[in-house]
Length: 461
Image 1: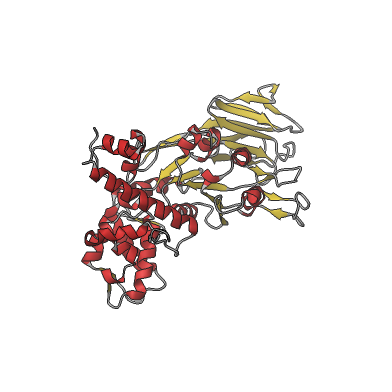
Image 2: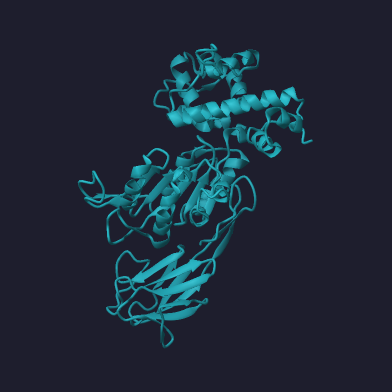
């Protein structure tokens, strides 16, 4: 498996370990030519989609491959016609030491690792493509993306709903050599489970009921570009080995097909789940996690980057298609925005700004233009939070945001409920987390985790 980097914005080391290798032709046709590859699987052969393309007529279309893993680097012959040799010995599979010479057909090649450890510093820029932020949390993210985007490394983006994970994937694609290629988005949580395999990998005609014609999958559609797989934690366990195989072998087999098709695709995946916890719980394969998290970037929540709110509002106003002259927010709105919990993060902030524009007459957004649910968070209107929890029988109404998809609206309500419940609970018990946990009939570790998640102060006793 590839080595996972420790370049995770928001904590830990600030380094990226990029595994690269150089293959240099030292004898035969093309002598002197050199290839630098930053993939863990390097294909060698005459076919044009190989990483090392050879014009030697004695080299097979797919002749050999070099696989770099935790146990070492393996040179593997792919049933070639004229064989793969290390010295005088024809090999099927052999471990390579640095600077090993081997021969495919009549072409002699030297393999040399060129791994690089890159120190990551916060970017000096306040933006990276469509992402903006002047605080240290986001500039750390930008520092990682500036280094990673030009490579072909697989990236895993972690973060709460609404933090901008898709924007990261689009930014990585835009700053990569693949920018002119396709950019394909797939949400594992939005597709019916029965169609996931066909959507991702394609199918042949007659492979299942309703397959009236052959269809390419999204991996094939992304050939030469980038595929963004959102909510990867929702991928069923039985499909995870198939995705792992695509990532490892760089080829895809359609449902009902007998042969696999080579693909050249960069993968960026995202999840709002803690995939390490999912691995520990047996719901996500460890080998797939490490294959995806070659570089893992954690996006901070909006409450962790409150210093960026004014910059974000200015950015959202400038890019809004519905803005007719609004240039900012007044001091009261700014104070509210900087103290509000923002369970929906930047996506919720964007929705609030967009909804306020039609109700704004002057150059700045005022409190009167804000939606009632947000105004209810003002200190003098705290009692109105009770309207969030109601049913017909008890006279309570759930104030759901219908401007966002159902899944996101549900998560916003759950986040808001969690936050308010915990605030009231911890205040009732004078900040004593142990007493609060007993009163809530919760495990102390669980309630501590939630308090930290919602940035609620408590006494650690």
